[in-house]
Length: 325
Image (cartoon, rainbow, N blue to C red; front, top):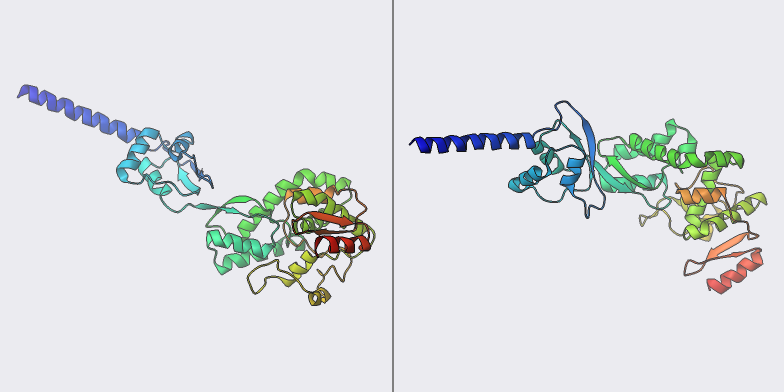
């Protein structure tokens, strides 16, 4: 009996010690609040969530956390996005949190898009209410008309699901400012207003088949402006037309629409449109600042998206017959 009692005592002590160790390993890392955003990449392939939690000091032990995941049956992949965690959370609380919908979601805006179009793209991910869409679309009114278009920089964002449309708009504008800031002195030295540069960059971005075209198109636009010619750019008319019945924002235009009295109609009015027609990326902005030297005044893209330019309208007509007919 004495031997049995000793064995039981040892077992009980070991259980208590093991419980204490597990309690410590699965306990909170910090005693007071230390909140942070823990991020799962947009493409989580090869991402080790547990190791990332350990590296950010959100859990004490990676092996103990993996054991907890297995025992809890919650060892499935964690959804991409951002999670608001705190170092005072214990492992169970962390595990529960990362099994929920992320607090921040990845949104990618590619290409040169207009303000309302970007709102729709964000809505597809965040599930915005009509009120949030309105807040986004009207955010510029407090900043000035120069923020109506062009400053909602295209990139990949990690956006909080609980912020207002106006707050998200501020994030995009702040990111634009970060991207544009290194070029601001260069624009000033060239005596080009940032608003002018952004208008030209937006036209370049919509007209180019890719970055390889941008400097040439920039040179042609500047040539037309300097010679007092009408720009006659279809993309400005597409902006005027807005959203088509089929749901797209950048559809085709016909000859009758080129007679529209809109101030964005570059077939009627000389000079640049009142605002950018979309928010360009840094390549187009750089191209507006550093145009290619060219004698060309006209350009077109063939069916393979290869650009061809002409110095005169007669040359342009030859290009039309050669590459489009």
